[in-house]
Each structure stands twice: as C-alpha cells, then as structure tokens.
Image (cartoon, rainbow, N blue to C red; front, side, top):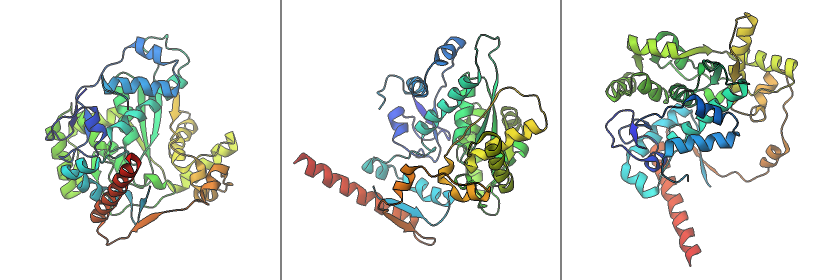
Length: 368
C-alpha cells in the first residue's frame, strides 16, 4: 500500500516510509492513497476478536505485504509551541534520514491506524448482534485536542464501520467552532484547563479530515493549511463545512462541567473519570438529561484519573494512586528544560545528535 501527503507535493512512500516519518517533507501528513472497504462479513468476523486481534487485522489492511514490525526534553510551553520546531526538524530530509527519526504522536500515520481499533472495539462492545439490516448504528464520543482520534474514527467510518461521531473538546474550542461555524482559526491564547492534554489550539489532524472530506483533493487541502499557517485563520468553503457538519457533531465543555461530571460519575457508578474522559461523558449526561432518544453510545476514555490528582481534588473526590505509579516517584528523572526564549529547534537537533552518538557508541561496544 502506498501513502501520499495531504498536500500532494512530497513523493508517495510505502508503509515503512510513512512509519519512519513525522510530517511529510511538504509539511503535510501521510494518508493511504486508497482506503479499503469492509463488508458485513468482515465486520461479523471481527466482532469476536480481542482488542489486540483487531489491531492486527487493521494493521494487515494498511500495511499490505510488508512485515509488521532515554533522555528527554521538558518544555516550558505548550504543545502548539513545540510543534513548530518539530515540524522544522522533520522538514530537513537529510537530517531525518541520518538519524532515522520518527514521531509516534498522532502526526504519525501508524498512531492513527492503531487508534482506529478503539472505534471498532467500542462498536462491537455496543452491538450485541450484527444480524439486523442495515447494521446497527453506534454513537462514539471522542475527547480530543489534536484530533488524532477523531481522524481515526472518521477513517473507520469511511471504510465501513457504522458509527456516528461526536467530538468533545475543552475550552480550547477550535474544533468545535470549525464543526459548528466553519471557523478554523486560533484564539488569542491557549487556555489552561483541567483536561490539560487537550489544551491545544492547532489540531493538526484536522488536515487529514479536510483531505478526506474534500475527496482526497491535495490542492484544496494545501491551500487551506497554507492559509492557516500564514494567517492563523481560515473560513472553510461552504461545501467542505457542510460535509464536516454532516459527518461530526461537536461540544465544548468547561472546567466546571468537567468536575461536575467526574463527581456525578463517581456518585452513580463509583468510577473515577480522568478529566479528559469527563469531557466526553459530559456530552452523554447532557443527552440523557434532555431525555433525547439515542442509539447506543460509547465515550472513549483516554487516560487514568491517577495521572490527574489535581483534577480529582477539584471535583471533591479522593485521588487513587496505584502502587506502580507511586513507585515511579522514586525513580531518577533526567530532563533538559526548554525555556521560553531558547532556540528549541537547535536544542532538538543537538539532543538528537547526542543520542545518535550514544547509540552508535553502544552498538560499536556491543559488536566488539
């Protein structure tokens, strides 16, 4: 299977090329050149698989005949600010090849591919029978910041999974505004929220969604994203916005609503939600409180509440910290602080160069 950039300028690559890449050299994101289509029989076969089994089947679809295959930097800033030097480093093709660089956040196609399994697994958990015609519909509520899990869900939908998508965000609401109004533009600043991993203003995976909605039109996608990079603001073309709002529903959730949802879920189910999961569950509570008729619904839960004790306390609940996490507090921490005003791109390159030297030295000593 071949992979192409959403911006249509970079050469196409095989799965290995997409895997060992971040951004494509033209600044776009890699996507399969063609999407496979799943029939009812395949979905019925997959419905009995375990989660790892689903991942394996999905990987086989998109990898084709190919084989299935430290020190850290600590940033004084947010995800959007770090994204720029990362993008600049990956644009240096020679540097990327020299050090075998790859990104395993949702910039990388392989991350989105594996996230598709969440949607299939959720669907099969919510559908006791696939004997009906048409297949039953399931609503999947996706809490997100960079839109990786949203892109995964939309691709799953495109290849044949009968799901309806709801994207749930915190007060950093660029995706919500895009769905509701076609307003893909930055706010004045990133807002700090209890759902901190979703405190993102540049949801780069929306580029994949735009590409799919436009019928894989790289020219349209490139024009949109280059305008966004220049002006930090894009009004989606009417047809594209119409397709987006038909494919996805959206909601934006405040910190107050997050803590209320965490408290309610604990009171009703004795289940401790993380603040990001609570963003999704808040949509569910909104619907049942309005007594809205609904298809089966699944809220994706991206993290453990143990990672966010401050949010748990803000909800008036008691944090539960597993012994495995407590043990980590006594481990050595090694990091280099990337302060505001530092040259982050140079620091990234220097760190990569240093790690490469360490690995080469280790490999040489091992061979001797």
